[in-house]
Image (tube, rainbow, N blue to C red; front, side, top):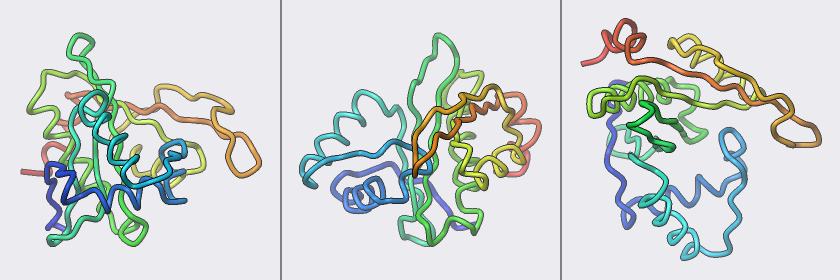
Length: 176
């Protein structure tokens, strides 16, 4: 799993992968359902987000093939924080690829920008992600009860965070 690299997104090269994964049934793990009628509509939607909402967006590659993506949003140098999303396709999800990609991405962010804290949000039914994030050093900062209606019931949303100091005292030491 050490051959994971982050590649800057290239719409022409990566559109099919992003389109298939962001519009999949699997998306429920981290986002609301995106409803767009055509790939062209999706490409326009993504371009707007890449220019206005997503601050940094990278494809997660393993041995030359895309297996996911990472991005940040709500980026604020004034407040010193941002939120991140890590998505790994279903076939590679239980391999630890998401954790490795997240650590690489967080390190990039802390090294490139003077931010103090990184946030991520995880729905309470995504127990694997909650556990992985807590083991990695993220701390629970909040919980929004009954935040999302999914598959016939309401689910909460955990707000997790990691500070620059915590990262470099723990995870930052284990990667180059």
